Length: 351
Ligand code: DAH
Image (cartoon, rainbow, N blue to C red; front, side, top):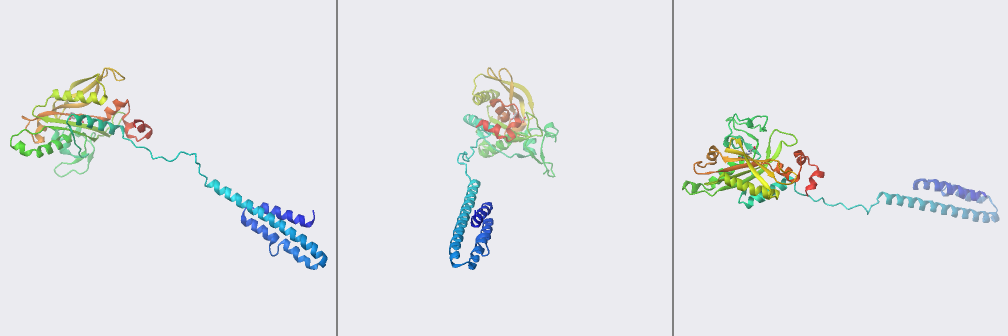
């Protein structure tokens, strides 16, 4: 290998060693730059005879071309590596599944509420909605619940700190029963002229589903839960009607005919007599167990009076049931808290 071959080899090694375009340009300057090694060789020609100048000059030019070719090869290699790195960084995996819009769905308790509204709607019941922050009067007093009633205790009720000088205040409603009074009072107002003329009032037939709140929390109680109130008031509405309404409702709700209903004597301040309603299935996983599904009773005369009606003329019944519990029974869920944890793995099973 002569000196020129060695120079080409050195340049080639230097170029290949360069990791970046900037390093490569520095390497180029060492060989082809103004004071680079090839330029130095060309300067050396001046001292040679014209004959030697010719051959040596041609050799140096060849050497220069080989070095330039090596430089170009290294440039191409670097550019190629850069392109590959960029392609890799921006790679799209076209085999990944596309982003889909998640299909939403109704919460299982909302499904139950919709079923309740549809079934009672088919029996001529209107659906009423009212405030969750309720006045003391509607939640307790108007419902014949005296000041010393245990339900009024701080242990059971979330009070909102707005107590006025006259002792009236606000609370998170502990049941949907205040909607009985709110709705009936409105109904009576709407028919005030007929009532004043002694004409019969169109019956009150309403349900009021919604959220309710109590200081309570375990597997079957949540501080926020749902209730659905029912009220049917007329001149001749009796327990017999209540039983028929319940039988119809629960058979439709559970899509079962093998269902027995039982009224168990109980106590509520706003009804007299009062009853708990139990149901039992003749078949299936819940066979033979009495399941408590509602409280009910004939509306107490004091409450009828608070509706603005004469209890000697108007009579009827009220009931309150728990849509959360109905949802648990219908779907076989044994922990109420699952409904309100917001875990999609649980909730999406109902879609
Ligand atoms: N409000 C009652 C409760 O929360 C349930 C209830 C019982 C409602 C009897 C009624 C009724 O309308 O008549 O436990």
